[in-house]
Amino acid sequence: MKFKIKNLFIYIFVLMYILTSSISYSSTVFAEPDENEVQADDNSDIESDEDEDEDDEGSDLEDSESNDETENTNSETTDVSNESNSLWPEGPKIKGKTAIVIDAESGAILYEKKKDKQMYPASITKILTCLLTLENCDMKDNVTMSHFAVYNLRYGDAHIGLKEGETISVEDCLYALMLASANEVAYGLSEHIGGSVEGFAEMMNNKAKEVGALNSHFVNPNGLPDENHYTTAYDMAMITKAALKYDQFSKIVGTKMHVIGKTKMTNEKRYTNNFHRMLYEDNKEYYKGIIGGKTGYTEESGNTLVTIAERDGRKLICVVLKSKKIYEDTKDLLDFGFEKFKSVTIDESTITSPTGMCYNKLAQALGKGIMTVSYPNGNYLTVPANADENDITYEIALKDENTTDSTKPTTTNETASTTKPTEKADSPSTPPVATVTYYYDNKEVGSIDISYKVTASPKEDNDDKGGFFKNITKKKTVNFFSSSIMKAIRLLGLILGITLLILIILAIRIAHINKVNRKRKEERRRKRLEIRERERREQEESYRRDREHRTNRDNHIR
Image (cartoon, rainbow, N blue to C red):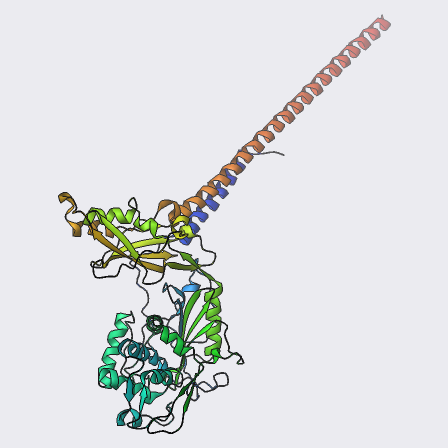
């Protein structure tokens, strides 16, 4: 084999091309997101096109006909589980126009589809009405139905047949509201709590903002159609998360049937049945682990459904709006949330350690003190089932300043907690001063609150707290050895190592080829010399014989 040096350059050129392509690919895969990138606004006009011709919550969802118009093709579906190059699991395909699945404790969004798109909610509005009732009423209080409450219903609106002036307990009202979706009861509760429907609607909007439902607006307590009454999948998940803080809420929405006793105006018992099909074992839509939920339907909203389920100690909230296959969508989304994610316990000792970053920053700004942790969203994080816990990062933000601290990845020790939960630090004496928010794959997976009781004043040269926090919070430094940059460097190192190995093999091969070529060349040279020597000898022999022949001939002539 004849090897030319130009072949080596060809090999090196090919390797460099592969290396360059790999680096370019790694920079695409592992690049940090641009913080200034603006997401496309998906808060488009409220859906108002008709979806399915069905009765209220008790209607047959599977056999319904759709009159739904084609949605604008420019509107985008934001699905956190389907982003390119994402470490997040790929979510199921669903029929619903918008949907979300969150962890009921940590608040982590496991799946979303247009979560901030404003839609008509229908009767799932009553979850917020129930929440305000639980906050403001005793279960033994009585509510009397007004003329407005009883007679302000349209034909076909869900009700339990209460009469003007009839009185039932708040507890019975909530069962009628959440099981039978009784609209006159919703009006009665709104007047009982807010003085009027308008007053109660104001309370609803204030409460929605308080729990983080910022893209909703409510004008009535029952969700009957109104162009100014709308919500989003995310907002309904936040409202449901807040309602779950009350054990009575879970009990009510998980009840299959409730009996309202006789009243002074009605000599018969009223039986209220839960419309949510996933509660019933003999129903094909039954879902193991379901806690309960709320159904909804109007022609304007289509089918809406909120469902809470629990499995292996993890509780999920699923919201699906305007779907032709509402129960199939919900089942698929809940299965996705339970099967593709896990919980990781937070180790607060890393946060509160006197040698830790959080403590040192607070101590430098505020002075020496005692740090405690509270868990408004549970003491665990929700991450993909195959997640590397070393890739979990956290960010510190002051509650009284709109600033953030640097991020850093947690470690296995930080997430595998062996410490006991600290006392709740939400008393007036130790109000939370900061929040630690945890992230995986740039998505929020949980948070904790930090309280700090100062025991010694900071040094005078560090008394400019605002400037200090302004400086430390503008930076967003990711730990080098678990950052995306490091991943790219690791990939580059692997490629360089392989390249070096290939070059060494090529060098050995070239040396061997050159050695063989030299031997062959020497052998050919030796053979040429032998041939020349043999030809020379033959020629000399020929000359000798020729001379001898001429000599003999001359002698003979003489």
